[in-house]
Image (tube, rainbow, N blue to C red; front, side, top):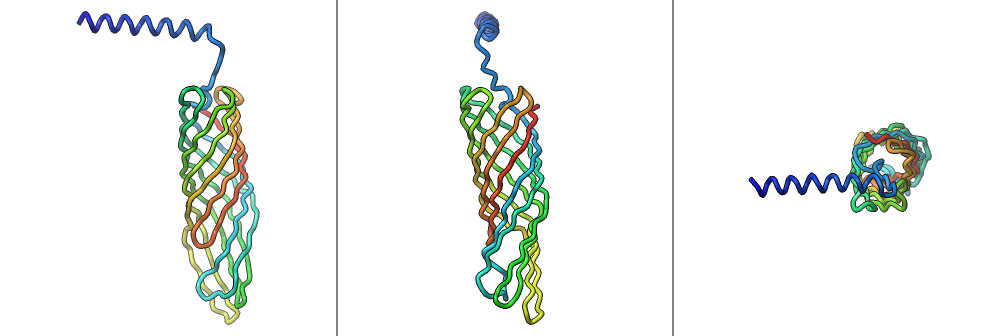
Length: 205
């Protein structure tokens, strides 16, 4: 009991000293990057396709650019005052359609909403600015169809998915609000690829 009381006394003293030091130390507030956050933004996404579906002949290669709205939620933790690690789930909303012609017909891909689950790690170049890299996985809603010159039609509704990487910078405006810019690239199956430029604002709880 005496040992426990002594330890409690030492802990209380340490807390008092820590509080006094914190009040006199220079402000290095990285609190914006610590904790849960939600975000909303806009993306300019280039979606490309380099393969068709069965029955369509010839080399298929086409792309399209389209604005996409996005929502996100995640959690970050600052380690040793300089390093950031975290995870995030993001939803992109907006359709974009690619039309391309093969030697015996037309191939169309309509890409709808997508979901990305990712982790990021970064370095705080200042208490309010972090440079980061991201790795994750993307699921892309996609409807594919082919109309051949002989009148045959083929429709496939199947998600495409694959690995995603990204790099970006995030700037804290205050302890709750921040802005972010990011480049992302996702190589998906069925010949699809997404290259995205993102701008977003975030709120930290």
